[in-house]
View 1: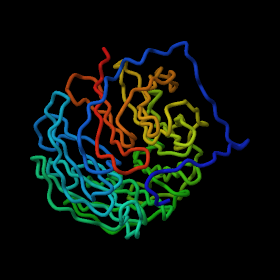
View 2: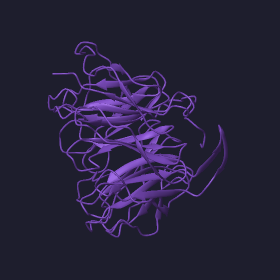
View 3: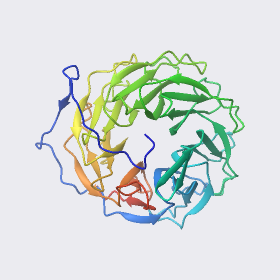
View 4: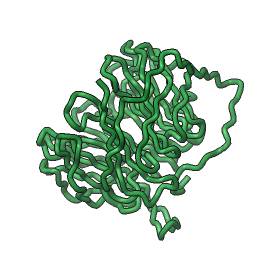
Length: 389
């Protein structure tokens, strides 16, 4: 799947897949949590957006990976929810995923992109080069050193940062969509990395997360497989290697890890692009999960995030919905279930999503990278300020 944007596909449900849809208007609240979007220019097709204090001034900054410009855009924050004009840095070929970490442990935030390797001529895909990650070490003033590239599996759609061998040095993990694998690159602690080691996943993994799913103190991996609607769980051995995968039915989108029912056991949350919903799988604490529960959201949810949007101490869900230009907010009840969605408008084709307090008022705001319905041409991000109490 190397096209510009994900296409709809027929969805077949089997008798083996038990799903529960919870829709109740009894405890719904009016959609007054997020304000109208403030739009800022990024590079073309900002598929991923993330945040960090890149110049160490105590104000939240934003960064995007720009798939069709082979670049990263950094927008330094003013601290009041507004941002300065973007400054671009070169990345690898067709950057898609984007992460932040202090890879060389110098107290300055670095940026990492996963690069699909696509070469485009207009809207025509000419070739796909070998997959890479690009590491841009931060200078601490909002600028970055030139990129250093490292090989990954084929078509790495996402990158995660974690210390999977527990040596205090950040490692990189990529989800390699065309190779049905994840690549683990162990860090040397100086911002450079050892050659990759690959592990098998399900069909077409496009997102990967690092978490201790069975609470044994050893980091595990979760790969989201949109080719077979599963998440592959690879339990870690604590030395940077992993057991063979166990697959769980989650849905057809990306899976993240959070504790949504506050029981100390990691849960899985997935966005279901083809069925306009999100799935919640409550964790048992041993690396396995209860059957998924499904909640409707907007049209074509492509990313989901967890945060306490209304400051009641209960985790909430937020999805970015590419085809109806909205984010959906589902307020949590604190027990792992959620109220019906409220939708808020964004820019054209929201894809990337991050929840962060951009104006330092103690409330989480929502930021989306907007790519348009067809996945190219758009070059903006939307900032939705939290206007709740």
